Length: 225
Image (cartoon, rainbow, N blue to C red; front, side, top):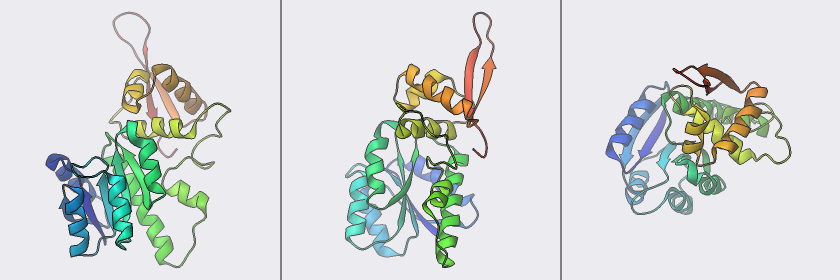
């Protein structure tokens, strides 16, 4: 059983995330914390395997928490939860020990994918096997040859990842404008990356017809992509 600490200053969100984690086989939430200080206290009280860590906390941000827990010798793995506008900052946290991040808003399916990938990686390591970087990338849905197309010149992997995270966290198809707003980019940029991902078979396009005018283009991430 993988023991999880859920850290979020919003009590309602912490309860929702706790319920999500409890629905994934092999995981259990053993504690919640609502500040950076409380998170470090919970880590001192009992062993924790994985921290679902909100980046925005009232006393310190998630990056500072990761640095402190590593400095104190805690080896718990981390999945950071963040807003799209803060992805670049949170990617820096990955260099300090955060395994992956989730972009708000996300649904149960998005979190389940991360947790199941984490469990697979743990089984590989615990079994004495060694995972190649490409396999690690595949497990966590990172941008790699196995999961996304080779990006043409002038396209940013970070931006493509933002679009992917928004689509994975959506409850249904989204318009280019909705994706742009959630990812914190222009509509034109979102459309450019959506066309690229659609051509590669990673995104599926559907049309929603209204009373008049052109149909609205709606996008959804392709299952298994």
